[in-house]
Length: 236
Image (cartoon, rainbow, N blue to C red; front, side, top):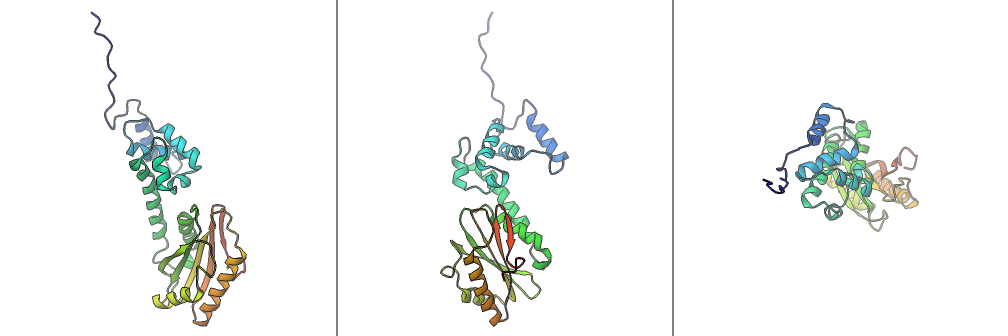
């Protein structure tokens, strides 16, 4: 007697009939930093947020749209949530990586002489600023041993004296008891070469600092194409 067609049984959350997820997990845990391709890292994160679905096509689609791991992790939350197949939970799985990466990078520059940990500082600023779509200005205030006292976000927008007043930057250094500072901002275009306005405002701040014995060690410009130290270029 024909029992009739059977209804497919949907796998329970977390099951992996093909073993693909288990193999991916094993490669992650047993391999080195290059054990997984970039899209597989995205796929693994999506697996934690979307347990019942093959998320490899979604991972590849995100890579295609945002261009890289950094592009995905630094993407706007709304853009991630509204991408087909995504949602709040899967977007959060991407954003937590950016948060963790920033925390780790910041830990590498805290409680250490910044000038002796220069590459760690550049890594920290690059992770935090290189993929921003707006220009952001920050001041890193340092103590007498060149350790970071405060990392202040001055604002978003073009770098000029209308947005940044040299007396306010130096005045804040005095309030904090800072002995030196490092300016940092990003170029959303990706090209980190300093503009004439960058050079002019930096030198005005440096002049104001010299009057009160507060050193401007550098002005670092961050872009997707790299970083530029104005000090190294002889512009300060």
